[in-house]
Image (cartoon, rainbow, N blue to C red; front, side, top):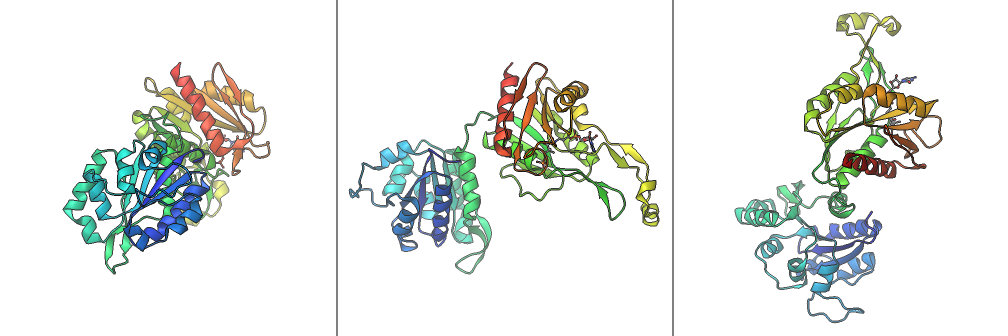
Length: 398
Ligand code: PMT
Protein backbone atom coordinates (compact mmCIF):
# COMPACT_ATOMS: atom_id res chain seq x y z
CA UNK A 1 0.00 0.00 0.00
CA UNK A 2 3.02 2.31 0.27
CA UNK A 3 4.61 1.58 -3.07
CA UNK A 4 6.39 4.68 -4.40
CA UNK A 5 6.27 6.41 -1.00
CA UNK A 6 9.31 7.58 0.95
CA UNK A 7 9.02 7.21 4.71
CA UNK A 8 11.53 8.78 7.09
CA UNK A 9 11.58 6.84 10.35
CA UNK A 10 13.07 8.86 13.21
CA UNK A 11 14.37 6.74 16.09
CA UNK A 12 15.40 8.31 19.39
CA UNK A 13 16.93 7.19 22.67
CA UNK A 14 14.39 4.98 24.39
CA UNK A 15 14.31 1.31 25.28
CA UNK A 16 11.35 1.08 22.84
CA UNK A 17 13.87 1.66 20.01
CA UNK A 18 14.05 -2.13 19.59
CA UNK A 19 10.40 -2.07 18.41
CA UNK A 20 11.36 0.39 15.67
CA UNK A 21 13.12 -2.47 13.87
CA UNK A 22 9.80 -4.30 13.44
CA UNK A 23 8.20 -1.03 12.38
CA UNK A 24 10.88 -0.45 9.72
CA UNK A 25 10.33 -3.99 8.50
CA UNK A 26 6.51 -3.57 8.41
CA UNK A 27 6.86 -0.33 6.38
CA UNK A 28 9.25 -2.08 4.00
CA UNK A 29 6.74 -4.95 3.56
CA UNK A 30 4.26 -2.30 2.40
CA UNK A 31 6.82 -1.42 -0.31
CA UNK A 32 7.80 1.93 1.21
CA UNK A 33 11.31 3.32 0.64
CA UNK A 34 12.34 3.59 4.30
CA UNK A 35 15.16 5.83 5.54
CA UNK A 36 15.99 5.64 9.23
CA UNK A 37 17.31 8.75 10.98
CA UNK A 38 18.72 8.00 14.42
CA UNK A 39 19.76 10.30 17.21
CA UNK A 40 23.13 9.61 18.86
CA UNK A 41 21.32 8.34 21.98
CA UNK A 42 19.24 5.89 19.93
CA UNK A 43 22.46 4.20 18.81
CA UNK A 44 22.99 3.18 22.46
CA UNK A 45 19.83 1.07 22.28
CA UNK A 46 19.95 -0.40 18.76
CA UNK A 47 22.68 -0.68 16.13
CA UNK A 48 22.28 1.23 12.83
CA UNK A 49 23.22 -1.96 11.01
CA UNK A 50 19.89 -3.50 12.06
CA UNK A 51 18.00 -0.77 10.19
CA UNK A 52 20.37 -0.84 7.22
CA UNK A 53 19.80 -4.58 6.82
CA UNK A 54 16.03 -4.18 7.09
CA UNK A 55 15.62 -1.15 4.83
CA UNK A 56 18.48 -1.48 2.34
CA UNK A 57 19.27 2.20 2.98
CA UNK A 58 22.02 3.84 4.97
CA UNK A 59 20.93 4.65 8.51
CA UNK A 60 21.74 8.30 9.09
CA UNK A 61 22.59 10.01 12.34
CA UNK A 62 25.42 12.43 11.61
CA UNK A 63 24.40 15.55 9.64
CA UNK A 64 27.95 15.96 8.40
CA UNK A 65 28.48 12.36 7.33
CA UNK A 66 29.68 12.37 3.73
CA UNK A 67 30.07 8.61 3.30
CA UNK A 68 27.08 8.30 0.98
CA UNK A 69 26.91 6.56 -2.39
CA UNK A 70 24.56 9.26 -3.60
CA UNK A 71 23.72 12.76 -2.47
CA UNK A 72 21.65 12.63 0.69
CA UNK A 73 21.35 15.55 3.03
CA UNK A 74 18.62 16.76 5.33
CA UNK A 75 17.03 18.98 2.67
CA UNK A 76 16.97 16.41 -0.12
CA UNK A 77 15.58 13.77 2.24
CA UNK A 78 12.97 16.19 3.54
CA UNK A 79 11.92 17.05 -0.03
CA UNK A 80 11.52 13.41 -0.99
CA UNK A 81 9.63 12.42 2.15
CA UNK A 82 5.95 11.51 2.01
CA UNK A 83 5.89 10.90 5.76
CA UNK A 84 8.04 11.56 8.81
CA UNK A 85 7.30 9.06 11.57
CA UNK A 86 9.23 9.43 14.81
CA UNK A 87 8.96 6.31 16.97
CA UNK A 88 9.95 6.12 19.73
CA UNK A 89 10.00 9.86 20.44
CA UNK A 90 11.84 10.75 23.67
CA UNK A 91 10.97 13.77 25.86
CA UNK A 92 14.19 15.36 24.58
CA UNK A 93 13.31 15.14 20.87
CA UNK A 94 9.74 16.29 21.57
CA UNK A 95 11.13 19.40 23.28
CA UNK A 96 13.53 20.03 20.39
CA UNK A 97 10.80 19.66 17.74
CA UNK A 98 8.42 21.89 19.71
CA UNK A 99 11.02 24.66 19.91
CA UNK A 100 12.42 24.37 16.41
CA UNK A 101 15.89 23.23 17.48
CA UNK A 102 18.06 21.77 14.75
CA UNK A 103 21.28 20.23 16.04
CA UNK A 104 21.39 16.83 14.36
CA UNK A 105 20.19 15.04 11.25
CA UNK A 106 16.73 14.17 12.63
CA UNK A 107 15.89 17.65 13.93
CA UNK A 108 17.23 19.48 10.85
CA UNK A 109 15.31 17.14 8.55
CA UNK A 110 12.12 17.47 10.60
CA UNK A 111 12.29 21.27 10.33
CA UNK A 112 12.58 21.02 6.55
CA UNK A 113 9.77 18.44 6.11
CA UNK A 114 6.44 19.63 4.70
CA UNK A 115 4.92 16.13 4.59
CA UNK A 116 2.60 14.68 7.29
CA UNK A 117 4.45 14.15 10.58
CA UNK A 118 3.59 11.58 13.24
CA UNK A 119 5.27 10.99 16.56
CA UNK A 120 4.90 8.27 19.13
CA UNK A 121 6.05 9.40 22.59
CA UNK A 122 7.68 6.68 24.71
CA UNK A 123 8.99 7.44 28.19
CA UNK A 124 8.38 6.96 31.89
CA UNK A 125 4.82 7.87 33.00
CA UNK A 126 6.04 10.65 35.32
CA UNK A 127 8.01 12.22 32.47
CA UNK A 128 5.07 11.81 30.06
CA UNK A 129 2.67 13.43 32.52
CA UNK A 130 5.02 16.34 33.22
CA UNK A 131 3.22 19.55 32.12
CA UNK A 132 6.30 20.62 30.14
CA UNK A 133 6.15 17.48 27.99
CA UNK A 134 2.38 17.85 27.63
CA UNK A 135 2.77 21.51 26.60
CA UNK A 136 5.38 20.55 24.02
CA UNK A 137 3.08 17.86 22.62
CA UNK A 138 0.24 20.38 22.45
CA UNK A 139 2.52 22.80 20.57
CA UNK A 140 3.34 20.07 18.07
CA UNK A 141 -0.37 19.21 17.61
CA UNK A 142 -1.09 22.84 16.78
CA UNK A 143 1.68 22.59 14.18
CA UNK A 144 -0.11 19.67 12.49
CA UNK A 145 1.91 16.86 14.05
CA UNK A 146 -0.16 13.75 14.79
CA UNK A 147 0.65 12.54 18.29
CA UNK A 148 -0.02 8.84 18.91
CA UNK A 149 -1.19 8.31 22.48
CA UNK A 150 1.24 5.99 24.30
CA UNK A 151 -0.11 2.67 25.53
CA UNK A 152 -0.48 1.97 29.24
CA UNK A 153 1.24 -0.91 30.96
CA UNK A 154 4.35 -2.13 32.70
CA UNK A 155 7.28 0.11 31.74
CA UNK A 156 10.95 -0.86 31.47
CA UNK A 157 11.76 1.21 34.59
CA UNK A 158 9.37 -0.92 36.67
CA UNK A 159 6.56 1.65 36.88
CA UNK A 160 3.09 1.04 35.52
CA UNK A 161 1.19 3.67 33.55
CA UNK A 162 1.06 5.57 30.24
CA UNK A 163 4.33 5.76 28.31
CA UNK A 164 4.71 2.56 26.30
CA UNK A 165 5.24 2.85 22.57
CA UNK A 166 2.27 1.11 20.88
CA UNK A 167 2.95 -2.06 18.90
CA UNK A 168 4.53 -1.56 15.44
CA UNK A 169 1.29 -2.76 13.78
CA UNK A 170 -0.62 0.13 15.39
CA UNK A 171 1.97 2.65 14.18
CA UNK A 172 1.90 1.10 10.72
CA UNK A 173 -1.86 1.79 10.63
CA UNK A 174 -1.15 5.46 11.43
CA UNK A 175 1.33 5.57 8.54
CA UNK A 176 -1.15 3.95 6.13
CA UNK A 177 -3.90 6.28 7.29
CA UNK A 178 -1.68 9.29 6.64
CA UNK A 179 -0.35 8.49 3.17
CA UNK A 180 -1.65 5.25 1.62
CA UNK A 181 -4.45 6.95 -0.34
CA UNK A 182 -5.36 10.30 -1.81
CA UNK A 183 -7.76 12.13 0.51
CA UNK A 184 -10.58 12.54 -2.00
CA UNK A 185 -13.20 11.75 0.66
CA UNK A 186 -11.89 14.30 3.18
CA UNK A 187 -14.74 16.17 4.83
CA UNK A 188 -17.33 13.48 4.01
CA UNK A 189 -19.25 11.61 6.69
CA UNK A 190 -20.20 8.10 5.69
CA UNK A 191 -22.07 5.29 7.39
CA UNK A 192 -21.63 1.68 6.30
CA UNK A 193 -23.55 -1.35 7.58
CA UNK A 194 -21.81 -4.71 7.47
CA UNK A 195 -22.17 -8.35 8.41
CA UNK A 196 -25.15 -10.47 9.33
CA UNK A 197 -27.85 -9.69 11.85
CA UNK A 198 -29.10 -12.37 14.24
CA UNK A 199 -32.72 -12.92 15.33
CA UNK A 200 -32.98 -14.97 18.53
CA UNK A 201 -35.52 -17.79 18.27
CA UNK A 202 -35.15 -18.85 21.88
CA UNK A 203 -32.39 -18.49 24.50
CA UNK A 204 -30.22 -20.95 22.58
CA UNK A 205 -30.87 -20.63 18.87
CA UNK A 206 -30.98 -17.79 16.37
CA UNK A 207 -31.73 -17.02 12.72
CA UNK A 208 -28.92 -15.52 10.66
CA UNK A 209 -27.12 -15.66 7.27
CA UNK A 210 -23.63 -16.26 5.92
CA UNK A 211 -22.40 -12.66 5.71
CA UNK A 212 -18.88 -12.43 7.13
CA UNK A 213 -18.82 -8.62 7.07
CA UNK A 214 -15.80 -8.58 4.71
CA UNK A 215 -17.47 -6.46 2.01
CA UNK A 216 -18.79 -3.86 4.45
CA UNK A 217 -15.54 -3.72 6.41
CA UNK A 218 -13.61 -3.21 3.16
CA UNK A 219 -15.92 -0.31 2.28
CA UNK A 220 -15.38 1.25 5.71
CA UNK A 221 -11.60 0.79 5.51
CA UNK A 222 -11.26 2.29 2.03
CA UNK A 223 -13.45 5.30 2.90
CA UNK A 224 -11.41 5.93 6.02
CA UNK A 225 -8.08 5.66 4.14
CA UNK A 226 -9.46 8.17 1.63
CA UNK A 227 -10.12 10.64 4.43
CA UNK A 228 -13.82 10.15 5.23
CA UNK A 229 -15.18 10.13 8.76
CA UNK A 230 -16.64 6.63 8.94
CA UNK A 231 -19.26 5.00 11.14
CA UNK A 232 -19.50 1.24 10.79
CA UNK A 233 -22.69 -0.36 12.08
CA UNK A 234 -21.82 -4.02 12.26
CA UNK A 235 -23.55 -7.28 12.96
CA UNK A 236 -21.52 -10.00 14.68
CA UNK A 237 -18.35 -10.89 12.74
CA UNK A 238 -14.99 -12.42 13.50
CA UNK A 239 -13.17 -9.55 11.76
CA UNK A 240 -10.81 -7.25 13.68
CA UNK A 241 -12.01 -3.64 14.10
CA UNK A 242 -11.25 -1.25 11.22
CA UNK A 243 -8.64 1.29 12.40
CA UNK A 244 -9.81 4.91 12.76
CA UNK A 245 -13.46 3.93 12.24
CA UNK A 246 -16.29 4.42 14.73
CA UNK A 247 -17.64 0.88 15.19
CA UNK A 248 -21.20 0.36 16.45
CA UNK A 249 -21.87 -3.32 17.18
CA UNK A 250 -25.46 -4.57 16.89
CA UNK A 251 -27.12 -7.97 16.94
CA UNK A 252 -30.65 -7.83 15.55
CA UNK A 253 -32.14 -6.11 12.48
CA UNK A 254 -34.09 -3.80 14.79
CA UNK A 255 -30.90 -2.75 16.59
CA UNK A 256 -29.22 -2.11 13.24
CA UNK A 257 -32.20 -0.02 12.13
CA UNK A 258 -32.07 2.01 15.36
CA UNK A 259 -28.29 2.56 15.08
CA UNK A 260 -28.55 3.66 11.45
CA UNK A 261 -31.60 5.90 11.73
CA UNK A 262 -30.23 7.60 14.87
CA UNK A 263 -27.14 8.64 12.89
CA UNK A 264 -28.65 9.20 9.46
CA UNK A 265 -29.01 12.97 9.75
CA UNK A 266 -25.23 13.49 10.17
CA UNK A 267 -24.21 11.48 7.09
CA UNK A 268 -23.38 12.50 3.52
CA UNK A 269 -23.36 8.92 2.22
CA UNK A 270 -24.97 5.76 3.59
CA UNK A 271 -24.12 2.30 2.26
CA UNK A 272 -26.01 -0.79 3.36
CA UNK A 273 -23.82 -3.81 2.72
CA UNK A 274 -25.17 -5.87 5.65
CA UNK A 275 -27.43 -8.85 5.02
CA UNK A 276 -30.52 -8.53 7.15
CA UNK A 277 -33.37 -10.99 7.70
CA UNK A 278 -36.79 -9.74 6.59
CA UNK A 279 -38.54 -11.30 9.57
CA UNK A 280 -38.00 -11.91 13.27
CA UNK A 281 -39.90 -14.07 15.71
CA UNK A 282 -42.70 -12.21 17.48
CA UNK A 283 -41.64 -11.29 21.00
CA UNK A 284 -42.90 -13.80 23.49
CA UNK A 285 -42.32 -13.81 27.21
CA UNK A 286 -39.09 -15.46 28.39
CA UNK A 287 -41.28 -17.79 30.41
CA UNK A 288 -43.06 -18.97 27.30
CA UNK A 289 -39.85 -19.33 25.27
CA UNK A 290 -38.33 -21.55 27.94
CA UNK A 291 -41.36 -23.81 27.93
CA UNK A 292 -41.76 -23.94 24.20
CA UNK A 293 -38.83 -25.62 22.55
CA UNK A 294 -40.73 -25.89 19.31
CA UNK A 295 -39.42 -22.93 17.28
CA UNK A 296 -41.62 -23.89 14.34
CA UNK A 297 -44.66 -22.80 16.32
CA UNK A 298 -43.29 -19.22 16.60
CA UNK A 299 -45.01 -16.55 14.59
CA UNK A 300 -42.91 -13.98 12.73
CA UNK A 301 -43.21 -10.22 12.23
CA UNK A 302 -41.54 -8.03 9.60
CA UNK A 303 -38.30 -6.29 10.43
CA UNK A 304 -38.00 -2.60 9.55
CA UNK A 305 -36.55 -2.20 6.03
CA UNK A 306 -33.37 -0.17 6.57
CA UNK A 307 -32.60 0.63 2.92
CA UNK A 308 -36.17 1.60 2.11
CA UNK A 309 -36.30 3.86 5.17
CA UNK A 310 -33.10 5.61 4.07
CA UNK A 311 -34.41 5.99 0.52
CA UNK A 312 -37.67 7.50 1.78
CA UNK A 313 -36.14 9.76 4.44
CA UNK A 314 -33.12 10.95 2.50
CA UNK A 315 -31.94 14.43 3.46
CA UNK A 316 -31.03 16.95 0.74
CA UNK A 317 -27.69 16.02 -0.84
CA UNK A 318 -27.52 12.63 0.87
CA UNK A 319 -26.45 9.64 -1.24
CA UNK A 320 -27.91 6.17 -0.55
CA UNK A 321 -26.34 2.95 -1.79
CA UNK A 322 -27.59 -0.59 -1.13
CA UNK A 323 -26.44 -4.06 -2.12
CA UNK A 324 -28.43 -6.86 -3.73
CA UNK A 325 -27.36 -10.42 -3.28
CA UNK A 326 -29.22 -12.68 -5.62
CA UNK A 327 -29.06 -16.24 -6.92
CA UNK A 328 -30.77 -15.63 -10.27
CA UNK A 329 -32.02 -12.78 -12.51
CA UNK A 330 -29.39 -10.74 -10.67
CA UNK A 331 -29.49 -7.48 -12.65
CA UNK A 332 -33.24 -7.52 -13.17
CA UNK A 333 -33.88 -7.97 -9.45
CA UNK A 334 -31.21 -5.45 -8.50
CA UNK A 335 -32.82 -2.89 -10.81
CA UNK A 336 -36.21 -3.55 -9.19
CA UNK A 337 -34.59 -3.13 -5.77
CA UNK A 338 -33.13 0.24 -6.85
CA UNK A 339 -36.62 1.54 -7.67
CA UNK A 340 -38.50 -0.18 -4.85
CA UNK A 341 -36.14 1.10 -2.14
CA UNK A 342 -35.63 4.57 -3.59
CA UNK A 343 -31.82 4.17 -3.45
CA UNK A 344 -29.39 6.09 -5.69
CA UNK A 345 -27.24 3.04 -6.34
CA UNK A 346 -27.47 -0.72 -5.99
CA UNK A 347 -24.40 -2.93 -6.05
CA UNK A 348 -25.43 -6.36 -7.33
CA UNK A 349 -23.56 -9.56 -6.56
CA UNK A 350 -24.43 -13.11 -7.42
CA UNK A 351 -24.26 -15.97 -4.96
CA UNK A 352 -23.92 -18.37 -7.89
CA UNK A 353 -20.65 -16.89 -9.12
CA UNK A 354 -17.45 -18.42 -7.82
CA UNK A 355 -15.38 -15.97 -5.76
CA UNK A 356 -18.33 -13.58 -5.29
CA UNK A 357 -20.76 -12.85 -2.44
CA UNK A 358 -20.53 -14.28 1.06
CA UNK A 359 -17.32 -14.94 2.97
CA UNK A 360 -14.81 -14.84 0.09
CA UNK A 361 -12.01 -12.24 -0.05
CA UNK A 362 -13.06 -11.37 -3.61
CA UNK A 363 -16.25 -10.16 -5.23
CA UNK A 364 -17.65 -9.54 -8.66
CA UNK A 365 -20.24 -6.79 -8.71
CA UNK A 366 -22.30 -4.71 -11.09
CA UNK A 367 -22.95 -1.13 -10.00
CA UNK A 368 -26.40 0.11 -11.00
CA UNK A 369 -27.85 3.60 -10.97
CA UNK A 370 -30.95 4.81 -12.83
CA UNK A 371 -28.78 5.72 -15.83
CA UNK A 372 -25.66 3.58 -15.51
CA UNK A 373 -24.56 -0.02 -15.33
CA UNK A 374 -20.87 -0.62 -14.50
CA UNK A 375 -19.72 -4.22 -14.48
CA UNK A 376 -16.53 -4.82 -12.51
CA UNK A 377 -14.31 -7.88 -12.92
CA UNK A 378 -13.55 -10.31 -10.11
CA UNK A 379 -11.48 -8.22 -7.68
CA UNK A 380 -10.43 -8.29 -4.04
CA UNK A 381 -13.12 -6.86 -1.76
CA UNK A 382 -10.72 -3.97 -0.98
CA UNK A 383 -10.39 -3.10 -4.68
CA UNK A 384 -14.14 -3.60 -5.22
CA UNK A 385 -14.83 -1.24 -2.32
CA UNK A 386 -12.49 1.36 -3.77
CA UNK A 387 -14.21 1.18 -7.18
CA UNK A 388 -17.65 1.51 -5.52
CA UNK A 389 -16.49 4.70 -3.76
CA UNK A 390 -15.11 5.99 -7.09
CA UNK A 391 -18.54 5.46 -8.63
CA UNK A 392 -20.36 7.10 -5.70
CA UNK A 393 -18.07 10.17 -5.76
CA UNK A 394 -18.56 10.44 -9.53
CA UNK A 395 -22.36 10.27 -9.16
CA UNK A 396 -22.43 12.81 -6.32
CA UNK A 397 -20.72 15.36 -8.56
CA UNK A 398 -23.69 15.39 -10.94
O1 PMT B 1 -20.24 -9.97 4.30
P1 PMT B 1 -19.60 -10.77 3.17
O2 PMT B 1 -19.36 -12.19 3.55
O3 PMT B 1 -18.40 -10.09 2.63
O4 PMT B 1 -20.69 -10.83 1.98
C1 PMT B 1 -21.04 -9.70 1.31
C2 PMT B 1 -22.52 -9.65 0.96
C3 PMT B 1 -22.84 -10.77 -0.04
C4 PMT B 1 -23.38 -9.84 2.21
C5 PMT B 1 -22.76 -8.23 0.35
O5 PMT B 1 -21.97 -8.09 -0.80
C6 PMT B 1 -24.23 -8.03 0.00
O6 PMT B 1 -24.67 -8.32 -1.10
N1 PMT B 1 -25.02 -7.50 0.95
C7 PMT B 1 -26.41 -7.23 0.84
C8 PMT B 1 -27.21 -8.51 0.80
C9 PMT B 1 -28.69 -8.19 0.71
O7 PMT B 1 -29.26 -8.19 -0.35
O8 PMT B 1 -29.14 -7.86 1.90
P2 PMT B 1 -30.64 -7.37 2.24
O9 PMT B 1 -30.63 -7.18 3.72
O10 PMT B 1 -31.03 -6.22 1.41
O11 PMT B 1 -31.48 -8.55 1.82
C10 PMT B 1 -31.41 -9.84 2.34
C11 PMT B 1 -32.45 -10.44 1.51
O12 PMT B 1 -32.22 -11.80 1.25
C12 PMT B 1 -33.80 -10.30 2.15
O13 PMT B 1 -34.55 -9.37 1.42
C13 PMT B 1 -34.38 -11.69 2.00
O14 PMT B 1 -35.66 -11.66 1.52
C14 PMT B 1 -33.49 -12.31 0.97
N2 PMT B 1 -33.43 -13.74 1.05
C15 PMT B 1 -33.25 -14.36 2.19
C16 PMT B 1 -33.22 -15.77 2.21
C17 PMT B 1 -33.38 -16.44 1.01
N3 PMT B 1 -33.36 -17.76 0.99
N4 PMT B 1 -33.54 -15.77 -0.12
C18 PMT B 1 -33.57 -14.44 -0.12
O15 PMT B 1 -33.72 -13.86 -1.17
